[in-house]
Length: 281
Image (cartoon, rainbow, N blue to C red; front, side, top):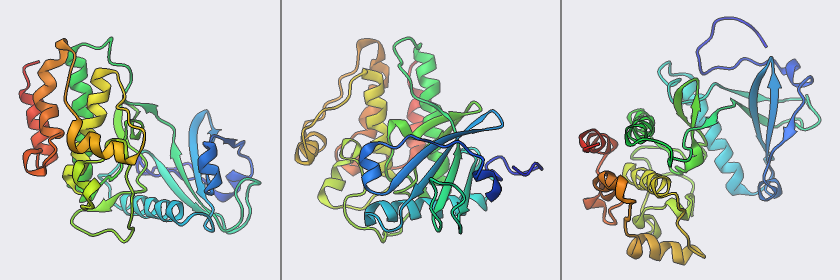
């Protein structure tokens, strides 16, 4: 790897480096069937991820991967993005530089990072609030740069060098722009009620997804549904906020994030932040 001063979020591997890498395949079986591949590797005692996509595979996966590459390309040109993006690099492999990376494929490399959200049972209320603030501020920075994540999940919050970062931007889209990609591009577990009715994603759908993440984290239980229709019923009709007694101070926060009607939900992430700050904890 070339060694010289660079922005925090820019990795600088050379093509020749890839021939020396010992890649370990870490892809879920379902993703492999759609041409998606994730690899882990170590370089100079640092851990990294490498992500590729077969361009002739399922169009949904190909479109998502290309969208994520475009997101990172735009982020790399902005000096104030490192606070929410992992160090990254996009590499076009014009030739087969590694047995696992065919010629013509593009690879996305990311520094490895630890999960940001872990079991909260041993945390104090103050520690929970601090973690929530980190998550909210990460999403706020994304929105302030004019982007919606579009597919927030617990595993998309990571910690790198004591900084909360976001990952997996396959469904990211510019604010106030209708995406070219149509169809279901969100995970039903985290979908706001209006998405089940065909509405477009907005800042408020990100807020709802974040609310589900927080709710499951605080209760230590995952919401359950058998199929897409059951998820729709759950989010649109049945979901009720029931927190443990020692965490009831977060009920107002979750009520504002998980309101079924958009007009009753927090209108932007700043309102979420302000509510958390004023909670009596």
